[in-house]
Image 1 (cartoon, helix red, strand yellow):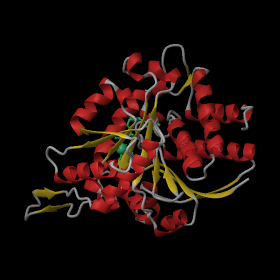
Image 2 (cartoon, rainbow, N blue to C red):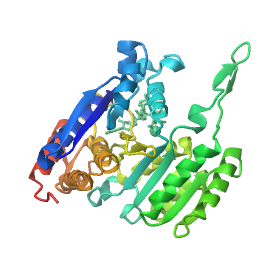
Image 3 (cartoon, rainbow, N blue to C red):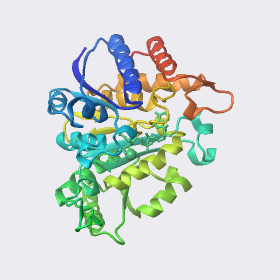
Image 4 (cartoon, protein in one colour):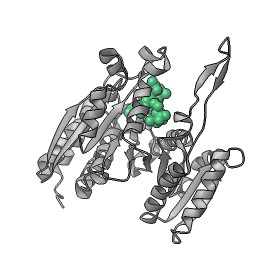
Length: 363
Ligand code: NAD
Ligand code: IPM
Ligand code: MN
């Protein structure tokens, strides 16, 4: 078996609730496959602000840098919403992504057959959906400078959308690589009819396309992409886009699976290191009530096994366990449908762990 050190950043709200599920599931995987996973907890977000007066303490950065991968729950909450920008939990999240150079955020959207009825969309639309949003994560509007208020009465604001050629090239290359091992279709989403950054983005996609002749490339404007994602999501394989467009489109796409609580993500660079987090936030409205769906977090742990540790079969064991529990009719509140058995966070975690332990396929 392998030895891996995993830094765990539970964060705020439902973060710690879902993270505990991922740890339990990973411990069961380690047990089953003879691996040793060491979990080291560190502080981020509102929890870090309360304890250390900063959303990202230096020792958290160091813990992440000295580990093989990072698991993150979620950050933020009403308690810190009034804070000045540099003391907001979300700042910690942006800073850790930047510090670690995690420019590629993979957000797979896979329709679970047993959850078709949980989506607000028609069965024919969502059945067999299997797409991957590749969101640029360390540039664009989120990191533009200046980003500030101006004027004597501070009545003027500026945010900046900036990208270097190199930043666009690396995310576009990553997306082509992913498309070439999937269904070989790449959709680049931009706003090239308006934005200069998008024009350069489009040029770079065209340049890179020459190196991937077997990948079919299309360009769609972001507004139309938002529409097509609902109209006919099966037309998409890999979708590559800038930071903020990807943020928005992935929450929209989560509805194809039935809930924001189902979508995992991997934040990567060009080596095996990665940070893994659900795409959802800290859900203050249900925090502390044992209602959160832990599956996005658990599926993020599966992505960690696959992308950082090259543990394909271990990752599949988690995915199979999740699928089996859903097939047996168990649901958290966010994905409940007629005839399903509604369970809390703890119970859902326990069901997945038990299912995984009972799984006869060790590969
Ligand atoms: P949110 O994703 O936290 O919640 C949106 C809605 O989805 C809520 O009704 C919530 O209850 C529900 N939901 C989210 N995850 C769920 C889960 N696992 N199970 C069941 N229901 C779930 O977004 P928001 O309400 O806009 O933001 C709340 C806070 O989270 C804000 O402070 C925001 O900045 C932060 N946030 C953090 C992250 C992150 O840490 N990556 C992502 C998004 C938002
Ligand atoms: C996400 C979140 C974050 C983002 C926020 C909390 C900064 O919405 O991970 O999708 O926009 O990247
Ligand atoms: Mn988001």
